[in-house]
Image 1 (spheres, rainbow, N blue to C red):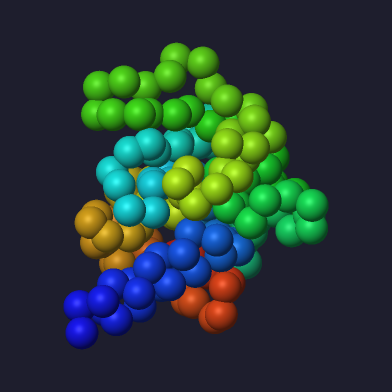
Image 2 (image 1 turned 45 degrees about the vertical axis):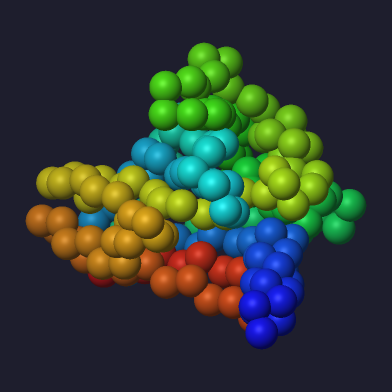
Amino acid sequence: MKKYLFILFAIALGTTATAQKKLYIYNFSDYDVTVSDIMTKHVTNDYPTLLYNYPYITIPAQIGSIELSNNIPTTPVFRFPFQSTAYPVDEWGRCTSATICSTNPLAASVAMATQTNAANAQVFHYIKYDDGAGAGLLGTRPLGVTELVLPNTIGYYEEFVTGTLIEYVVVIF
């Protein structure tokens, strides 16, 4: 029985690691929001992590949205970090432990090139956003914050899996 559970776990992990990943951030609030951090993490380990934090991404009030993904067919399926075709996410910082972070950011194309096998695969971890009156983190386990209440806005996070497509969705009201 344990053998079958292990095989099922291996298949599930492999599907997650090789899935196409997209991050959507929608702003339906009355306030412009600024995304200052987007962090990824390894599929199974705490490290390495990759962090995008400059330049900040401003999402306009009411109907603003961004989609961060890379749908170029020739790119690896290990999509985080990605070189976004929708918004210029140009550089990613890399941390290999809690105390060791690169001082030289990686170009998005270089960071994405490191995602050539499941051992290096990254998944979305969290975003940090600011609504002008407060800021906070919203993202995945172990962070586990699926709802963030700030003075001007409320943010919700959800993950949707369909086959090998994983969509990370942040909605701000």
